[in-house]
Length: 182
Image (cartoon, rainbow, N blue to C red; front, side):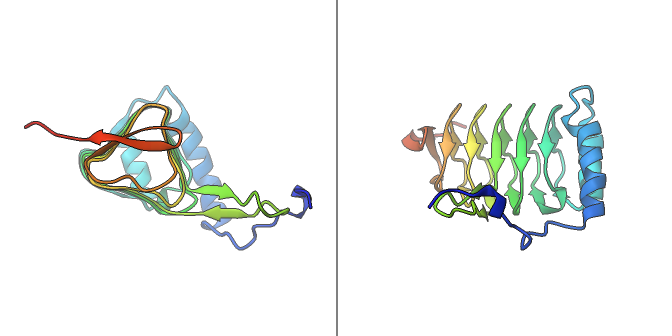
C-alpha cells in the first residue's frame, strides 16, 4: 500500500465557522504575523475579541502566528516571543508566567503516516505555570509541559515534560532538575 493524498479527507474537523476563520485569517496577517506591529496590548485585545481567554500582563511580540484564537487560553504575565507559531488545531492552554521564546512552535496537528489517506490527528497542548519553551523548540500534539519545566533551544517535546525539569534534544530528554534560586 502507498500513500494516496487524493483520498485525504478531514471533513470531521470543524474548528469554527468559515466566515470567522476567514476574518481571523486577515486579522492575523495584518496585526500578528506582520512584524511592523509592536502593539502587544492591541494584539491581546484582538485575541479576546476572537474568543481567546487571556490574563493580565500578557506580552505578544511581533511576528506571532496564531491559528485559532478561540481555542487559546493564556494565564497572567506570559510572554510570547517573536515569530512564535501557535498552530492550535486543538485547544492550547498556557499557564501564567510562561515564556515561549522566539521561533518556537506549538503544533496541535499531525498526520497518520501509517494510513494511505494520511489522516489528520490532533491533540491539545498544555503549558503549565512557569514553563519555558526555548527558541526554535517544538511542542508536539498531546504534550503537557508541567510546572516550571524547560524545553531547551531547538529541542522537540514529543511526550510530557516533568515539572521542574530541563529537557534538551530531538526527541527531548531530561538532562537535569530545574532549581530556581530566590
